[in-house]
Amino acid sequence: MSAGFAAKRLGKELQKISTSLPPGIELVTAENFEEWLLDIKVLDSNPLYENETYRLKFRFGSTYPIEPPEVVFIQLPDRPIPIHPHVYSNGIICLDLLGQQGWSPVQNVESICMSLQSMLTGNSKNERPPGDEDFVRANRQRPKDIQFYYHDNDV
Image (cartoon, rainbow, N blue to C red; front, side):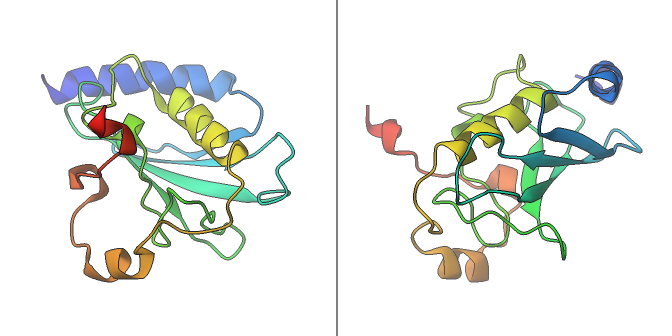
């Protein structure tokens, strides 16, 4: 797989999302095919995330879309990292869709944003993942290299 293939795919995605995105998703910057920033809002009524906007950073490798992009929440003065049982305080997201096992090349930036909106919408726990402080302090891996254990791995 060449970097050209990734750039071609990202070019098509950028063209589409520049003209139309679902409600609550906004493209902030996409100056190259390596890193994009998008903002998402939870549209359904969930008091945990009401009136909040969250910033996502997407990093694409040369093997995209065969391999998932690296996606994290980033903190800005007006953009907090959401408190959620699958979102670490450093912005790393534990979601099988973003890992090698759950990823499919049919996914794209828009579908990832919609999945994260849905994940936040369905949350009722105002808490971080177990072991958040230790994980954030000790982790030296890039998000896409972390092997999360998902509860449905036992099935």
